[in-house]
Amino acid sequence: MLHNHWNTTLYEGQHGFVWQYGEDLLNLLSPQVGDRILDLGCGTGQLTDKIATHGAEVMGIDHSPAMIEKARQNYPHLRFDIADARNFQVEQPLDAIFSNAALHWVKEADAVVSCIDKALKSGGKFVAEFGGKGNIKAIVQALQDALMELGYNSPGTINPWYFPSISEYATLLEKQGLEVTYATLFDRPTPLEEGSTGMANWLQMFFTSQFLTELSSTQQTKVIQAVEERLQPVLYKDGRWWADYRRIRVVAIKHR
Ligand code: BEZ
Image (tube, rainbow, N blue to C red; front, side, top):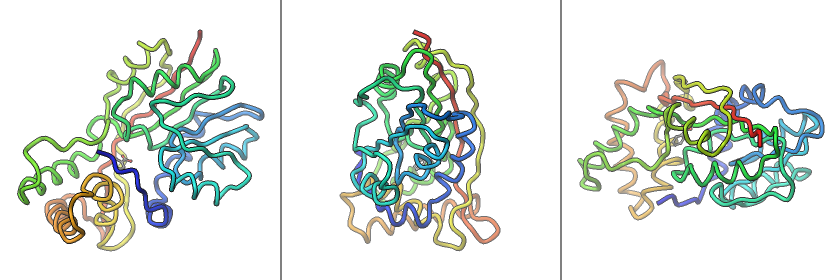
């Protein structure tokens, strides 16, 4: 189960790539002055702020109270609320919903898409990027193997994230009545922080602190070391760790 207690200092200090890559996605959003836009899964608010600089009326929501608290501190002039992507509502229909690196955390994608559809106005646009099919394949495999070796898991059972293929996600959007105008799935090997601790920090931030909360910190460290050992030959290059990210990007329009 997702623990939803995030270390925002670690997130902002060492995982800035999360929103730095997302800046590119803003071109697909193309926010216009006065557009009403929701940033779904806004984290600590960096991209919400970027959207606001285009003159849009933007609001960020996130499931994590810690992220929202940090976003409010970072950008006190913007509106941020705690909300669940599976069950959110907006006061007035939106011109666009934007989401970067968030939707892979929500397995109930049909509930998310239904909320998105309800929140958009006719002609409104959904623009998202998140982990797609095959995302962090080597990391997931190493986690499975390490957890099994340490006696915490049985084969093939680690799958806490939602990483859909294009056809799977486009079908979901179309079933909801949205028109998919753009979809792509691509590899984006992503450099983690320089030096030897990048993978341990990534695993701590995004896996052990979320899914292995019942283990002691010594046990968590053992898991992390076992994963690092397995990944070293494939994901440690030129003095740093890399995450084997694959992104799905979509744009869909509501016509009704
Ligand atoms: C991702 O951005 O693809 C991701 C981040 C943390 C955990 C899983 C996937």
